[in-house]
Image (tube, rainbow, N blue to C red; front, side, top):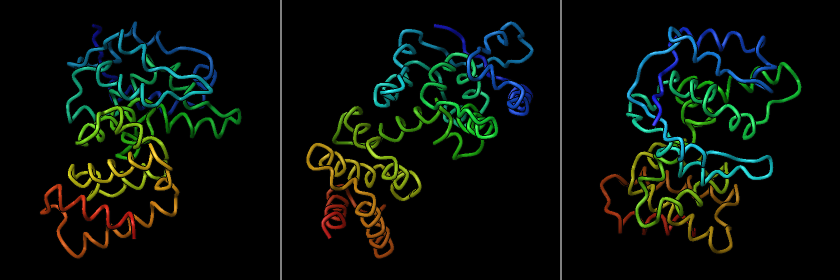
Length: 242
């Protein structure tokens, strides 16, 4: 197990501002030389499981999302609720341990101006959206965290359904009444998994948007948080077949 020291805030800020000057490094080089300067880092309780970290890998043809998500919580140990939202952790990981993964999973555009925005989006983690959806490594942790709350399916099954279609995934994440209520989330993801192993019709963009819209209406009529899992399942079945 290796210690994972966080970047200091000033280190993150300096790297962020220096992106235009470091484009060649992001595209082809390495930031491991930073490890030689301890003044750039803060100690943390996080550890890197090197064996599990090897599973966080992809190719240009296969993003390997499910396997990467399954590996991330084992690879990066000691992530507390506080650290899960700390850019200093995720920026360190995307710049040091997982730089090759990050630039393979999110290829850097050839156009320099587009490259600057792209790197700042996927190599750093600004705000809730940056942490939960954009950073190359933190997004894996957060998707795993969400799917770990789903009952009735294995974590792998939940991830397969959750990751299958980006618009569907975004619709769930952007609605706190769904993503933050484990009973509602479980019912929705279980329904998605049924569709995933069948005709995948529920993953059609407009169809699922309609489902979420009807679920929001149901939530306005009655307090979904007060319903048990059986009642929630009936509500989700209803909105999926309307």
